[in-house]
Length: 236
Image (cartoon, one colour):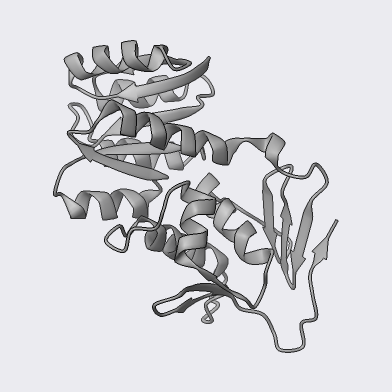
C-alpha cells in the first residue's frame, strides 16, 4: 500500500477518504492542523501529500512553502471551488496539481494515480542520460544539472524538462505535455501546466541569465531553445 498524508481540517472528509482510498491501495494518515501536518510530513517519506488550503495553525500555503524548502514530495492541493487565485498561488509555490472542493472521490483517485505514475522510476530506461548543451538529465536517478549545478526540480518540472530535452528545438504541444506530465487531457481553462512551465523556466535562468531556455509558442506549446549550431543530444 502507498502511504499518503492527508492534511485537512474536515474530520468527516478525512474519515471518508481514509476508508475510500484504503479500498484502492492507499494507507492514509490524516492530520487536521497545518502546523501538525508539516511536523508529520517531516517524520517519514510519503508517496504524496494531499493538502487543504484553509487550515488552523498555519494555512496550506505556508505548509507547502515549508515542505518545498526541504522536499520534492508530490503535493496535491485541495482548494475551494472558484478560488482561481488560490490555485495559481499554490502552483507558483510548488504544488504538483490541485483539485477544487467539493470533488468526487473517484476524480481524486484518478489525480493521485496520475501523480504516482509520474513517480514510477521503473518506466524510465535504466541508463537513460540526456544532454542538451549545458543541460544534463539522468532519467533513472531523477537528477537534473545545468552548467554543473544541480537543479532542484519537482516531479512535474523534471517531467517537463525531460519531455522538452528529448526533442530539443522542437515545439511540443500543450496537449502532449499535459498527457505526458500531468496524466490528463489539456484543458485551455486550466493554467496548471503553464504555471509549472513558468517555475521550470525560472529555475533554468539562474545566475542572472536573461534569455528564457523554454520558449512559449503562442497557441501551440513550448520549445527548449538551443543554439543554431546544435546538432543533437547525448542519449545513452
